[in-house]
Image (cartoon, rainbow, N blue to C red; front, top):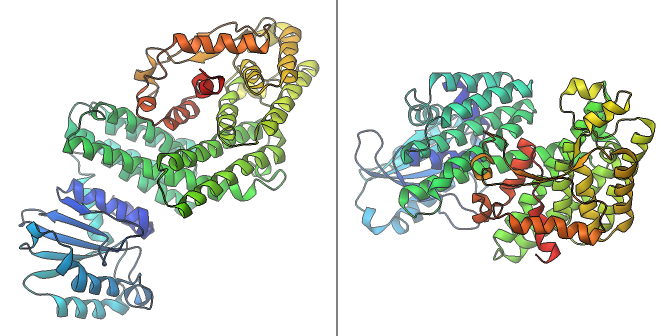
Length: 563
């Protein structure tokens, strides 16, 4: 286990990765972190500062200077301001005399050289000479290399009484099976269940559980990055974020030091999740969206079904990533102008990328599963956060409707309610009875009718009415709404939840259709009372919809109708 952790540490970048892990580690060790890693501010060589005792020793001031990987000649002393020696000199010359809080001035000071790897022999003498020369009764130096930090992690995060042996085993299995993502994810799911089992009552256990989850997810991500297969990490990060929110919920309202620590631990999970989804989308998807069939052919599948399923999955993932960008932008409206413009530019890149993804991968014009409306919904919600995307949306929906109509006409692969892969491979079969069975209900067509009514495209609305009249008279067109049991199940998927508005009136005019749908919203208070909505953390609902395959609630478009 120590080798696994050490390998993980050696693969971390300095900023937002190794320093984030060390911050959580110091907190878990019982130290009071008084200065965290920051950007754009003078740190005088100190990445992290903490007060406290390690083991049975006296309270000291710990000043950490963090460097990724091994320490060599370039990273020890070069012209770069990021080298370690200049940072240590800044600590001695500026931080210690001027930055240590007055109440801690009398404490001994330990300057920690924190490395993801080791000090290479070529610079060992230089480092030893520097630390010996600058050590005194007040100031000492410690080398925290990957081996020592790994020992701390095993002692304070992963020791047997905190993380059960079966959970450690599940982590090892998940790492070993990264090239088989479904198996790897299955083992990580067992790990998550083991971490959270029965631990939502005690604040200290909740805090430890969230920190353990963050660490295990970091380890999975770093190993996934090394083998260039992020699939298991992506799936695991979604599950971890949702379960972490469920654990956080009881500690959101009352202010206390422990509650703030729990909230900070949740943010650590969120940060890893964001790192993973951004690495996946920016590394695996965005570079190829503008090449015809590039992503479709990369599926390397013997069946077109695999291409279809994967393309809609990718559509949901890229859209979720764009939504988080938008969320960050408007959560921090007071950010400096340059950063604000950078967010806007990146969001526009995502708008353009989704359009190119759809144009260059025709599978996205022909959904084969009714629940692919979830990915379509997430994409349309994101596109409508921008301007001038409605024309593209209606063109796309129009082609989906036309391809479905043609598939019904020729008994091709029309959208159905089947979910098992082997059943989808055999779809469609002949016979009216079979068609009625696999289209007993539908969310896809009512949602297309909803968007066409909302945007004002009566032509597409009429096409949906034709499909209903000609091919799906038996089908229950329905829409999904959260219910009173949704809060208890939305983020864990323990039990089915929600309520259905059945037999929505597609025969009505678009105006009457919208009125029926939004009137139902008025009767249902359960969406606004969901914890993540109340706390302004609404993208979590979309993550849960994508992860657990529940329709995106109509409430996301409620304001567009003046409701």
